[in-house]
Length: 431
Image 1 (cartoon, rainbow, N blue to C red):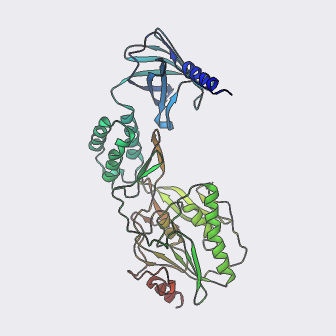
Image 2: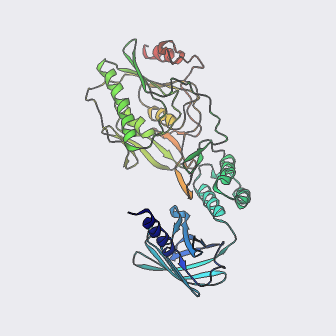
Image 3: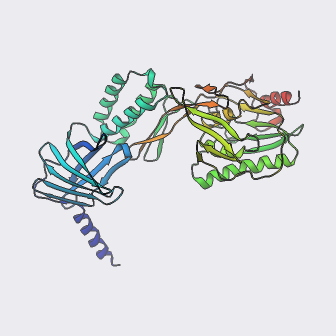
């Protein structure tokens, strides 16, 4: 197609996706806030209007509670005080309303139903709306919510948001929430960039030894497996990691290993599902742990079933058991240290409470919480702790896990059998 013709089509599409109008100055540069009400249920929505290239008005809608942000109206007409908007993408909804100097009232049509729509000019900015949602979510869901003066925190966060000109300038507000909660595990992602938690001071990893799964058969037919950090959430990559762990365990089983050392000292977290799935030959089927909320109620159970890991009812691994060799597990030693965090701690906890299992090394970092991500604004995802980890016996771990046998220092990842923690584990195994 001719380039000039393509440009003409683009300009025409921009023209017709904007509002045709007679007068719209009172709509511009303002945020309109209101609700769509359906009986006792309602959802807060925000409308904003600005000019396009041709000087015509464009309408956009944001529904933070549904993680919808800046959805542009595909059709927009303003005649006198009559406003019509159509959102063909994402929402498939229409708006018929009357516009006043300080309010917009009418009807919202969606899915064959019509709901009342009432909007008023808001004194807040959309950035303030983002932080209001973040605050509301944290206040209702954080495991540390009872430790906070929420009125004072909301005032401080609102002040930061009010002076912000872009989403990057909201970072101090998110950091303030996490710092006030003393949430060492939480963080925020903006435009897919990880913003480091300022209270998350981690020790340096043993670089060169913290990237790959490592396995070896030690003296006495002891199988040694080191599971590193794994942060890739793509399903295919996750299953590859799962299968790599299983493959190395299967080789050790073929070598007649019956006692095991699972080394989590360099596991700083990431995605726990493939880690647990990869250990299916050592983990029993059934409940192996759980997430527990602030009220000490079990929210989601960790389950092993037929070699796959289930997060509650959701199956998260599909590889099953890759080797059919029968295995008699005699003893399992688990190694932890100050780098062991998050999913690394979850694996340690899943192994805790099993028969003939003992933990060696140093206390973990204390990130033993579930941190789901909440979309609070356009390209902003807020992660904060909503649950603690619990083991198969119901013991809750609010600040990591301490070893049964404390072994300080003496790490040697290059020569495994010279490692002091491995040495202590082997001594116990051989008893």
